[in-house]
Length: 283
Image (cartoon, rainbow, N blue to C red; front, side, top):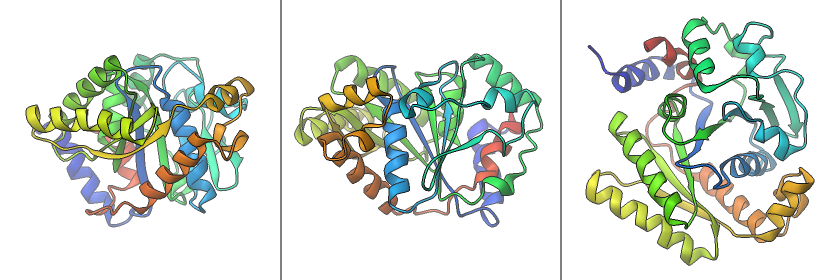
């Protein structure tokens, strides 16, 4: 029997020739509270400000953090789509120039999402979302089936951690789980709430070294985001910090990160957005 990761790769390769213009980035973390969703939102906005068309999809199940961080209310969410009440077009909401959002809402659980994905044919009218340069998934935290599945279908995984020992430990656990499922997965480390660039590098190197030693894999460190008091002020205002405080340290860091991610060479062809949804049929 073909294992899940092998099946995913085969389906991705078949779809690449036709659907190779949209890159999928999954933003995830080993534990909650490390600033993953804040990173997703501000990264998406920063990439959009660079002229890239971005769709941010909130798949942090049971929460609505993306809505809160953007200060928006989404009339329709993934819950409505998965339950057949709305089509893909009506749940997409424009929030800024070049940036759209699909809200996850707070009406269903992780198991609900998996069951609905498996059950439904997902007739997405894919041509309506193929115009994006990037689709960014903001997942939940930890090692759940939905988190790992959304990581496995991505061109890049951005794993957000902080310098705290518990965050590093949990990030490694997720790294281990993902590499076990797919040794070719491209994992990039982002260190949030770093005191300075040195602390970011030191934190990332801890993960990289232990991964090399025990997993024989080498994730890539792509940057840090400063521990900045303006971030929490922006959260309380329900505004993205990259817009509320454009010249704060965290905003400068997220812009550097956006430029770096856009500039990363892809190597192999992009996996293709159609495979993102088709992969769920392999379960």
